[in-house]
Length: 108
Image (cartoon, rainbow, N blue to C red; front, side, top):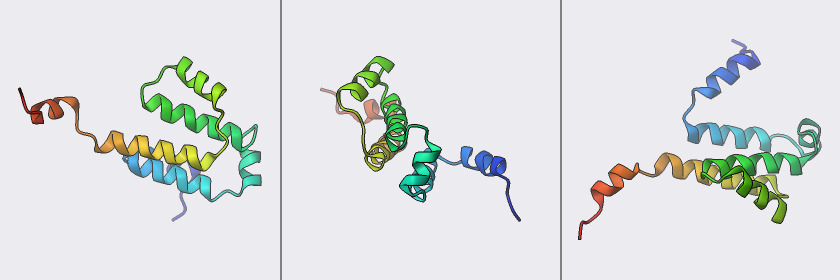
């Protein structure tokens, strides 16, 4: 059975956050730099900026804070930005909700 690209996208959208992050990282890593540069207009740096915007947004930072980060310390490594995104998504999946944390807290 051969799946269409749209079917693959639909299936990927239903995956848990951690598995989607792993899949995204795998797909990007399978491209060599010249392929990635052709796909992401502006090259690897533009892709790294997109990934940084994603993980910083997941952390709850404002668009202004993300812009400032990209301006003051421009991302240059797609792999590093993907590691950051994966770490943020891992924390999001594995950190208990605040209500649970409050229930666990020792009251003084």
